[in-house]
Amino acid sequence: MTPTAILETALYAADLDAAEAFYGGTLGLVRTMRAGNRHVFFRLEGAMLLVFNPRETERPPGPGGLPVPPHGAVGPGHVAFAATGEELDRWRARLEEAGVVIEADFRWPAPDGAPGPRSIYVRDPAGNSVEFAEPRLWGFAD
Image: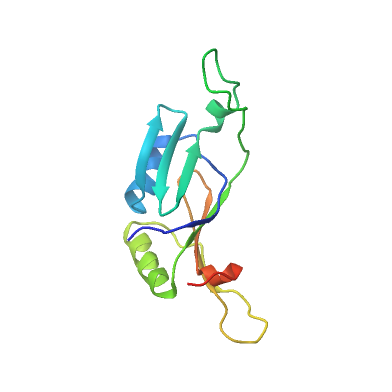
Protein backbone atom coordinates (compact mmCIF):
# COMPACT_ATOMS: atom_id res chain seq x y z
CA MET A 1 0.00 0.00 0.00
CA THR A 2 1.31 3.43 -0.93
CA PRO A 3 -0.38 6.82 -1.04
CA THR A 4 -1.85 7.58 -4.45
CA ALA A 5 -1.82 11.37 -4.56
CA ILE A 6 -0.44 14.40 -2.81
CA LEU A 7 -3.09 16.95 -2.02
CA GLU A 8 -0.79 19.58 -0.46
CA THR A 9 2.97 19.80 0.03
CA ALA A 10 5.83 22.02 1.17
CA LEU A 11 8.49 19.87 2.84
CA TYR A 12 11.99 20.58 4.05
CA ALA A 13 14.14 18.40 6.31
CA ALA A 14 17.72 18.95 7.47
CA ASP A 15 18.19 15.20 8.11
CA LEU A 16 17.58 13.59 4.73
CA ASP A 17 18.52 10.14 6.04
CA ALA A 18 15.67 10.31 8.57
CA ALA A 19 13.31 11.72 5.93
CA GLU A 20 14.24 8.95 3.52
CA ALA A 21 13.70 6.30 6.21
CA PHE A 22 10.25 7.73 7.04
CA TYR A 23 8.91 8.34 3.52
CA GLY A 24 10.68 5.44 1.82
CA GLY A 25 10.66 2.96 4.71
CA THR A 26 7.64 3.65 6.93
CA LEU A 27 5.33 4.94 4.18
CA GLY A 28 6.75 2.77 1.40
CA LEU A 29 7.16 5.53 -1.19
CA VAL A 30 9.46 4.83 -4.13
CA ARG A 31 12.62 6.93 -4.08
CA THR A 32 13.52 8.16 -7.55
CA MET A 33 16.64 10.16 -6.76
CA ARG A 34 18.81 11.51 -4.03
CA ALA A 35 21.39 14.25 -4.49
CA GLY A 36 23.74 13.96 -1.52
CA ASN A 37 22.54 16.09 1.36
CA ARG A 38 20.52 18.46 -0.88
CA HIS A 39 17.33 16.55 -1.66
CA VAL A 40 15.55 13.23 -1.94
CA PHE A 41 12.62 12.70 -4.32
CA PHE A 42 9.79 10.14 -4.17
CA ARG A 43 7.30 9.07 -6.84
CA LEU A 44 3.60 8.56 -6.23
CA GLU A 45 0.85 7.79 -8.70
CA GLY A 46 0.83 10.87 -10.94
CA ALA A 47 2.85 13.04 -8.53
CA MET A 48 6.22 13.56 -6.87
CA LEU A 49 7.10 14.32 -3.27
CA LEU A 50 10.25 16.45 -3.03
CA VAL A 51 12.05 16.73 0.30
CA PHE A 52 14.77 19.39 0.36
CA ASN A 53 17.41 20.23 2.94
CA PRO A 54 16.76 23.96 3.48
CA ARG A 55 20.39 24.70 4.37
CA GLU A 56 21.40 23.44 0.92
CA THR A 57 18.57 24.92 -1.16
CA GLU A 58 18.74 28.44 0.26
CA ARG A 59 22.15 28.84 -1.40
CA PRO A 60 22.25 30.13 -5.00
CA PRO A 61 23.29 27.57 -7.62
CA GLY A 62 26.99 27.31 -8.36
CA PRO A 63 28.64 27.77 -11.75
CA GLY A 64 27.27 25.26 -14.24
CA GLY A 65 24.43 24.27 -11.90
CA LEU A 66 20.77 24.32 -12.76
CA PRO A 67 19.36 27.84 -12.42
CA VAL A 68 16.91 26.90 -9.67
CA PRO A 69 16.34 29.94 -7.45
CA PRO A 70 17.23 29.56 -3.77
CA HIS A 71 14.37 28.37 -1.58
CA GLY A 72 13.75 26.98 1.87
CA ALA A 73 11.38 27.12 4.79
CA VAL A 74 11.50 27.75 8.51
CA GLY A 75 9.24 25.65 10.71
CA PRO A 76 7.15 22.61 9.89
CA GLY A 77 5.49 22.17 6.53
CA HIS A 78 2.49 20.05 5.62
CA VAL A 79 1.64 17.26 3.19
CA ALA A 80 -1.68 15.44 2.83
CA PHE A 81 -1.88 12.01 1.21
CA ALA A 82 -5.20 10.82 -0.21
CA ALA A 83 -6.65 7.71 1.46
CA THR A 84 -10.06 6.05 1.53
CA GLY A 85 -11.78 5.38 4.84
CA GLU A 86 -10.67 1.73 4.73
CA GLU A 87 -7.11 2.76 3.91
CA LEU A 88 -7.11 5.19 6.86
CA ASP A 89 -7.69 2.27 9.25
CA ARG A 90 -4.80 0.38 7.64
CA TRP A 91 -2.56 3.47 7.70
CA ARG A 92 -3.27 4.01 11.39
CA ALA A 93 -2.34 0.40 12.18
CA ARG A 94 0.80 0.55 10.02
CA LEU A 95 1.98 3.84 11.55
CA GLU A 96 1.36 2.64 15.10
CA GLU A 97 3.23 -0.61 14.37
CA ALA A 98 6.17 1.53 13.17
CA GLY A 99 6.11 3.50 16.44
CA VAL A 100 4.78 6.69 14.82
CA VAL A 101 2.64 8.72 17.23
CA ILE A 102 -0.84 9.54 15.93
CA GLU A 103 -1.24 13.25 16.64
CA ALA A 104 -4.92 13.44 15.64
CA ASP A 105 -7.59 11.19 14.13
CA PHE A 106 -10.93 12.90 13.58
CA ARG A 107 -13.80 13.65 11.23
CA TRP A 108 -14.21 17.13 9.80
CA PRO A 109 -17.58 18.81 10.40
CA ALA A 110 -20.10 18.34 7.59
CA PRO A 111 -22.67 21.08 6.96
CA ASP A 112 -25.55 18.59 6.68
CA GLY A 113 -24.78 16.81 9.95
CA ALA A 114 -23.64 13.64 8.19
CA PRO A 115 -20.25 12.15 9.11
CA GLY A 116 -17.59 14.36 7.54
CA PRO A 117 -14.33 13.29 5.91
CA ARG A 118 -11.70 11.76 8.17
CA SER A 119 -8.07 12.79 8.63
CA ILE A 120 -5.16 11.24 10.50
CA TYR A 121 -2.16 13.43 11.40
CA VAL A 122 1.39 12.39 12.34
CA ARG A 123 4.80 14.11 12.31
CA ASP A 124 7.76 13.10 10.16
CA PRO A 125 11.24 13.08 11.74
CA ALA A 126 11.75 16.76 10.77
CA GLY A 127 8.51 17.81 12.50
CA ASN A 128 6.50 18.29 9.29
CA SER A 129 2.78 17.64 9.61
CA VAL A 130 1.81 14.55 7.59
CA GLU A 131 -1.88 14.01 6.99
CA PHE A 132 -3.76 11.09 5.49
CA ALA A 133 -7.19 12.34 4.41
CA GLU A 134 -10.25 11.25 2.53
CA PRO A 135 -10.26 13.14 -0.81
CA ARG A 136 -13.83 14.28 -0.21
CA LEU A 137 -12.28 16.73 2.26
CA TRP A 138 -11.69 18.90 -0.82
CA GLY A 139 -14.66 17.70 -2.85
CA PHE A 140 -12.79 14.95 -4.72
CA ALA A 141 -14.22 11.44 -5.06
CA ASP A 142 -12.70 8.70 -2.88
